Amino acid sequence: LADVDGIELDTWLTTDGAFVVHHDRDLHVGSIDALRLEELPASVPGLAAALAACAVATVDVELKVAPETTDAEADRLGVALAHVLLAGHTDLVGEGRLVVSSFSRAALDAVRRTADEATDVTPAATAGVGRALPTGYLVGVLPGAGELADIVRSGHSAVNVAHRSLDAAGVARCRDAGLEVVVWTADEPDDVRRLYRLGVDVLISNDPVGAMRLRDV
Image 1 (tube, rainbow, N blue to C red):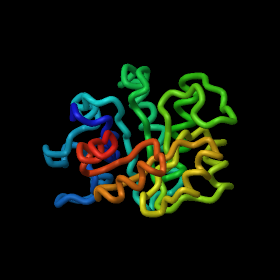
Image 2 (image 1 turned 180 degrees about the vertical axis):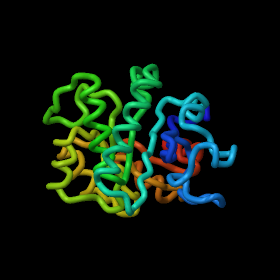
Image 3 (image 1 turned 90 degrees about the vertical axis):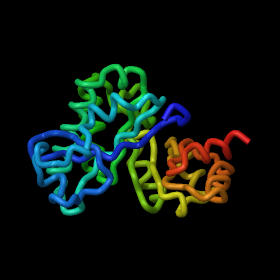
Image 4 (image 1 turned 90 degrees about the horizontal axis):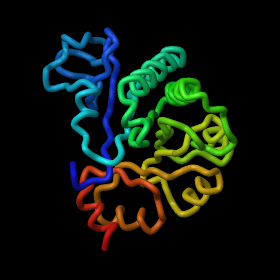
């Protein structure tokens, strides 16, 4: 990990209130969000342990929310994650090394609201200004200008978009809205080169060292 700029951790909340790190929801013992911490395999680390092991500049904590989750429940998940990160990882938050992303707008809005309330930040017209725990909205397809403007009004600082749906016009639309552009998940060299030419801010890859080599040539 020492050779990369950052890492993304996918986190789920267990039924007894523990955030753990795992990409997939379903394990051989059941769905993570339907199990207690003690029921999970030892190979599934807690979020705190995973964060402690990340000696990188930036950690993107992706809050995983099941598709059938109601907005009210997603809101609860976002509040819980924000409290855990703000209370238990003040060093990472204070250094600006923690960001949060999610495909759930309700959950992400709750993270943003809770972080702002905890740090006495007044919502500003410009995304992310003066905010602890920056937030990025994960999307498969880049939204239109109206939704991007709404993302900014909600205080989020980035839009995290599937790389194949992004072109120069999309990057310009994000820039006009005042949002950073994060792309996922680019592994092929031709894709990585194309995205660098577009001027994206963050590129997520399963081959980060290879992507960094292409960036630095």
